[in-house]
Length: 211
Image (cartoon, rainbow, N blue to C red; front, side, top):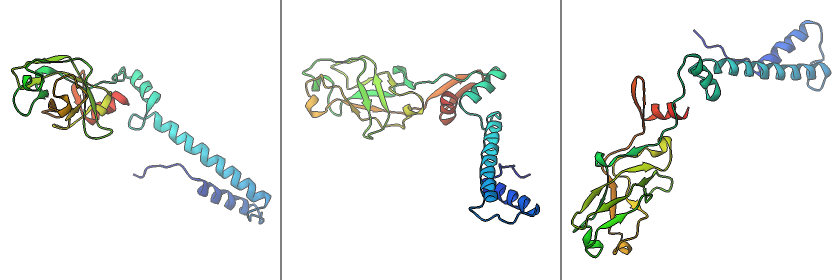
C-alpha cells in the first residue's frame, strides 16, 4: 500500500493549466493574467495541503513532537518523563582518583588530599562530557580512592565510554604542577530512566526524557 503524500506546486499548476485549457482559454504562457492566476492559486493550494498533512501527522504517535506529543500523552494518561542527569555513586567503584606510583601522601607532603565538591572531571575532547565530583578525602596511605560524580549536563550529554575521563581542575596538593593526581572512569556511563515497565537506557531514555 502506497503512502499518500501532499501534492506539490508543480502538480497543482499542471492540473489548473489543464482545466483552464479545457475551457478554451489559450493564453496560458508566463506573463499572462490567466497564468498568473494559475501560479498563485497552485502555490496557495500546495501550501495548504502541506500544512494539512503536517497537522494530521502531529496527531499520530509515531510522528508527533513537542506539545502534540504531550497532548497525546495526556489523552492516554502517560506523562512525559522528566529530563534526567546521569550520575555515578561511589559504591559503583567507577570514578577513581589514583596515583601512578606511591601513595597520595607521596604527592602531598605525606598528608591526605581533601578534594572538595564541584571539582570538574572532563575529557580531552573540547565538547566532551563533564562531571562534577563530590567531596572526598584521599588517605595519605592509599593509592586509589573512589568517588561519586554527577554530569554537568542533562540527557545523553552525560553518556561516556569507559576510560574516557583523564583530566580535572583540582590543584590544591603539593605536586599539582606535575599533574601527579590522576582520575579515570572504569566503566561506561549511560543515562537510565525508570518507568512503570522498568528501566529505559541509552538513546531510548534520551528520547523519552527530552522528547
